[in-house]
Image (cartoon, rainbow, N blue to C red):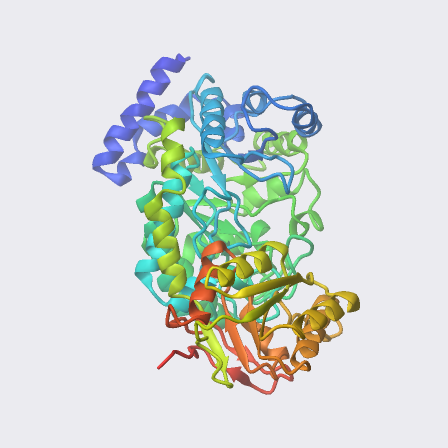
Length: 599
């Protein structure tokens, strides 16, 4: 049996060799390490876990209770000691773990977890991941971290250089706090305007555009020092069910799959993407059994490994999502996902049950030891490639300088300025003259409306803010209408005001209420500007609005870009990366590529 020192020395040797030849990471040093790992250590490498708390060794009573509930131990370090997992994923307090408070704290937590991992017998460091996609929908690190625009905003900007730089900034800041793997970019092609889970997380509806910008982001994340993860294979862009809550079905034929869904993944593979994440979606044209892709050998091994010739790491989407748990019990899901071709199992519910189920499957021969070694080899190969065996630790003091660095913030704003799309300007209201006026800012989002109002106020306007919520009540609509009477201009922010119920085909309660708000404000006779702050499709249900813009997000940079466009400080350059359909389904209201400019 090797000592930890001798094993660590061998793995450092892997790093030296692989620096000269990327393919050498599959050679003797990694194989030697695998031979000296126990079966339990190998199975541990397959799992990516969440931990509660902001420090590896000292946590609050609430965090300790949650760790005890999930794992039977109290601290994040003890979770690492118990399972020796291959990876950890960070979340905000919104989910519960509350891992992400400040750059120094995150870096300290990362160092503490790496210390716990590397003091184990094998000394194998962790892949530490999160979901920092850009934009405002799926993002984990908040200010002072730089809020780069999201995918669909980048799609509106059409710039490979901007997409690459955006990913580089995100990657650089993640790397600074010890997060070495980002579950991004989203490679889904959003061809379904009713998609409830992807939408602005996608670059758009054109496979070529999505492929170009996904490839650029893969390069950017690598430039920033983190592993990129293209998701959600084989494509989640044409669904009407959110896989967090149910199991969607993609009805694409093989020909449609090849033409629409696969090009971004092929492009990512060509750029050397480190990891591909699975989707909990059914795709019967590849697997008639109806198994979700995460548990489908024809999709993961046949299509991804075979047809696309991908030999990088495959990770599952979270196994605690409805798309997985609705069909597969806790002891079945991880085994079936692994047998299908996945290498790492993310957020398996009931960790003890999942771990022992995989361990038993290997011991019984249901999973071969060779198959287990193949996955462990891919995991160690990625850790070697990312330099984690050489040094998994980060400088916590430096993290404070890197995260939210001035040049990052400047680049974020410059890129955001190139993404806002002026869809409709029938009354010629925009750009606004700089003359002082009374402006009402209303609509969705407490922070969003306040931020819009503050930006307009800085331009010498007198601003009243009346936030009406995601589902405005009649009382709030009446309050906004009353406020409009005393103003010269109304700016309304909407959020998915075109959403329809998948069963009835009618607007959701939220969408109907937002539509009623806009109609009431138009009836006042005041000039009204509507800005769709998330998916750009809102105009399909607000066709009487004379002035409409799409921002594809509500980060501070997106809002500043919106106001700059309103006042003509920036000429709108964004072009729709999706088609805006007519509400009655009779064709396109605004085509892909549409966008107005000044002059």
